[in-house]
View 1 (cartoon, rainbow over the protein chains, first blue to last red):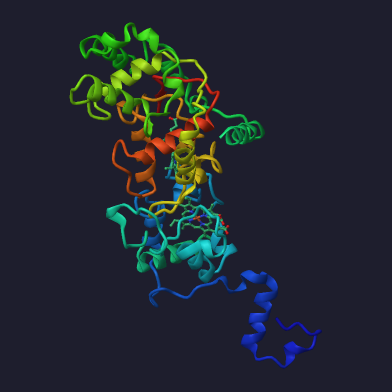
View 2 (view 1 turned 90 degrees about the vertical axis):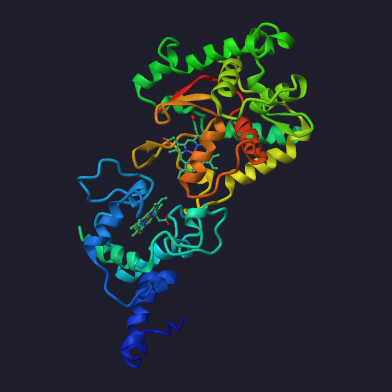
Length: 147
Length: 238
């Protein structure tokens, strides 16, 4: 990365400057966002149903969050409360699609990955945990969790 | 092998104190396990006592009290690694020339529970047999391998996250100290293999068939990891 003194930002096109700010802020993790999988906006209400479902999202097996009606929430992972204020839409998407790219040791499953898995049961073979549209729904919901 | 055993011992000594999932249970469930009159597993033990005579085990082995200590030192080596359930089936097949009780049938669980009870309270003492070393290593590898659509290994839950909560369930350290045991969720008795199958399907992976060598390998590793802990058969679990 080029970091030569204080002047260069004036000559840089604004997109590049924004990128530089991101790089400086996030270090190696700056490129961690990911564009929409479908190009369509997700549905936050459907996303909430997926996140709280023990059969589909499975999120509350590990995470807790602002879901007072859900009795059993996990404590293996950070709370989802306020996650929409801490992470951008692109960052949230990347963590859902394949968090292993950020932390290879994470226990969080990659929700949109079918490669490199061992002995997947016949009922689940060849399909990701969530479909692309469902990922977009979950992302749309998570960005609403501002506090 | 001696060196491996020593390394494992040292590892055990430096790791945190190990704990049976008995410690994670509610006082009511603990009482159920502690008091034989309340422990549903004792029904299987009683059936096992009847079978010990009627199925002809006593003809060779005499009083079942002679089985003291046996369950604490399985799996053993006999041409291949063999677990206690496998040994019972082998006795029926090779010595009695009859079709063995199916794995996890009421009869097989009853005999295993009866034999297990003879070692209750005794320390798990895996045999120091070098011929078991390859299966032991395989078991450890299987324990550490990520599997299934959720791509999780046994170790990720039972070593890294033991004591935490997977939704409403406490994650135990996965010690095989109580099997066969009565599980309230099953409303019945089940073997260690049944438990392992539950964990495997839980991460959406394909379990091995009952009796597969992979289970014996995992059991070998778990028994080694639990060496010195007291046997609890027949335990009760939520």
